[in-house]
Image (spheres, rainbow, N blue to C red):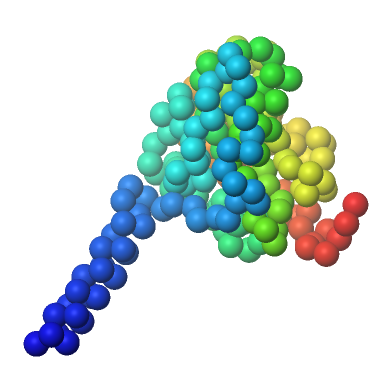
Length: 198
């Protein structure tokens, strides 16, 4: 009887743990390079949001669950294949021009500690839904270990994604970014691979 009770308890714990891992959708599991909080909040700018699920943060774009799931499949595959950890952050309230936005997303990437201990490559993409198009609604920020992703590589994805954002089609923007980033990183990975150094 006691053995049956222990077995039943173990089964219930496993089932509860399985349910807890995906309450509202897939959750990225990554090992930060350093503890969360390395990147500091910037005075006068929005506080850094936590990356909780889908490799996507949504503070102003109102992404649909379908589009977040779509993007997740691409970003999680890049993570699983040890190419890079990529995340998209939609954030309202960032003041200043492109330089201020670039600083904010760079510090956010540090705050989240993206990139694993083994595979330190990471890319954070910022969407600013509340700024006019001339203020650059899309900002890319690869970390130093993704040295082979150049500004030339970023040009088309940034501008094409901005076309979706400028039409207020943020689902289309997110989905386009997921597909194009996957394609570019995989193409470059086939050339540079994990053992190349600058």
